[in-house]
Image 1: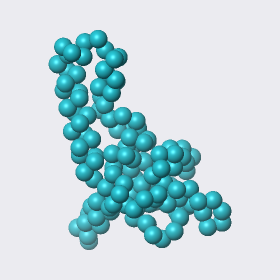
Image 2: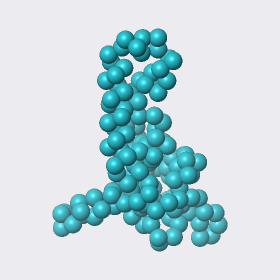
Image 3: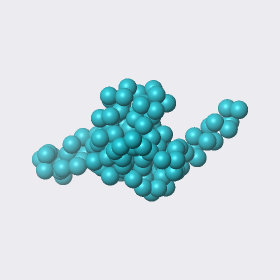
Length: 142
């Protein structure tokens, strides 16, 4: 499995919002600039994150984007699934009706375990955890 740029950029944009949490809405162009993402591409990702209820879009002169919840309440799994969809490697893991071999298929069990493990890890990480990880990395670099 390979995470797409949507998934990587979505996680980075959410981390950026978490790093600036409580400082007011952030302009799309500022997030894009800090994260090295095209504004147009980021705008599409932010639209999805707003629809998923993870980000708020504030209109007007002092508008921009902000997290819809506290950083500690947003799990990385929600971010990835919002922009990527399911983390299942094959469609039959999410919908066993798609395959008539599910009852006898050994690989189906393996793909299901992989999905559960990935979700378990992504569920264990919040944006607040990512902020702490970022700060720790920056302190080590000094």
